Length: 224
Image (cartoon, rainbow, N blue to C red):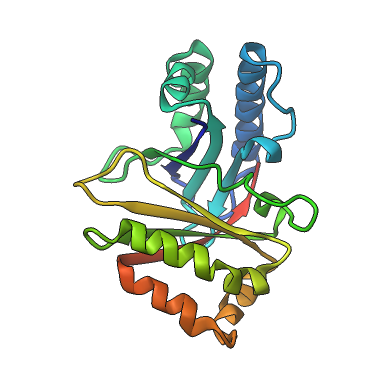
């Protein structure tokens, strides 16, 4: 089962990413690209087609989101243990804020939300100027109910976000037996995202959140 990596890295910089870090991130991604293709030449070279990107959060610019697809969590661990990744992380360590309470967050989704789209009518969210990333926790026993409500109501959001689709997946490595659902959607701007609440059917979308215990949505801009 193909999974999606979801990694949040805390940066020391709390403003625009410095040019030297931007160059290092691009080089790090090229290193991973080469490693992946050397092991599976059938993988698409296009990063969007592999759901691969690095994105900086707008609300807190010191948060860097890394996402890509792997054949399994175990396949990802092979990359993590590789000499190439070790060298990459050593170079990045200077820019990471992990000495105190902050830490790297890493888990996998049981879906491929960044490549699950109808390419005849939809466009990858990774090509959008802004991405909204939602982290939702389902109420105890409400995982299926929320999934069904999400699938039935997501068209309301997509009616505003088009051509960018709204997609999501469940966290595989559950924390404290909580079911967490992660969503991605592309937007032309944060204001456009906020305007979705004016949709005449928004109440239907809002009703789906009755199955949630927490909801947190942030915005990101792609840097690699």
